[in-house]
Image (cartoon, rainbow, N blue to C red):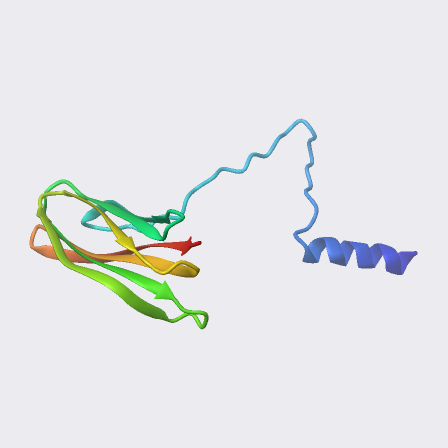
Length: 143
């Protein structure tokens, strides 16, 4: 019996332990805190990729610079994700640049169905004489 009790305690500790409270009227609440990168020039950025049933890719991206951003320049690459995890570029759009603090882009492109694809946006955001680089990705299947 003692061995069973010790074994159960060890299993409970190994798999996260048991919640313990000295006062049953106290309720512990977990707080959701997202993990976000801390950029100097970039306020927010995202990439989006989806496909319709005929293999038409809908791609978009949005990048917002901090106040005072002078220029946002982006290279976009649509790649097929191979079974071994390597990427094969399918289409590339270079030097998509805007003067100012907000960059938005959308584009459509047809691909072969039955593969997984990745949209990669490589951005350079210039502000106060300093350029900051960041990459945003989105993966999707073309069924």
